[in-house]
Image (cartoon, rainbow, N blue to C red):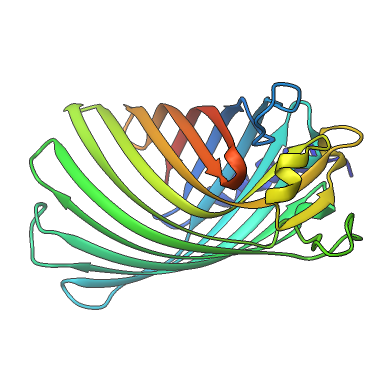
Length: 290
């Protein structure tokens, strides 16, 4: 079955499943444009594309005390790219979360811990594998219209297959990655139906860049493997880097259970050897809560 047919079948299954889902379930459709999918520095290597994603999530929530709760959430998502079929993917994950409210009422601070595991299945086998994450978040509503949040997150990605080495002394498992990040954000409800979100994230850890043969990137890389998704004679390189992400989004309620939103992200990454790249990401999302 072709990926486009799989995506259509998944959307049908999701809609059918959600008809009898628990109140915590939701269903989303998102259009995403990324102008630097390759995470490249040189103009010849920079590739952008438009993607369509459908997703659903849900699961039980257990109220342990007046202040403590536990949740188990499953997620299922599929993404189809317009030009780069190798990036098409279907992912399934499971997350266990604990939340603590330090008192009663809407203005008390909250603290949450989440651990998750996600199975990654791509049309490009190089990217197949598992993603494990742990996150701690603190949040507080400071006024009727303003809420603040901060988080720290650790991720580990493990690939299924290791291709043959391009260079004997450099590993080829380019998608075995680890990273840590921290971020802050704020939500501002300037109208009962509108919400503006701002965020800043600082990320330190492995990134993957796909380019044609490139000596500076080669010298800074910890892993190299052929990556034909973006054309012939292109290679994926793993490098440690520092990345800053700035984001802004606007959401509007549509009825009592749905919302539409527009979002923008700017990424700036710096690696050793003077290697740097930036990218812009645009989102349009429809989310329905059951």
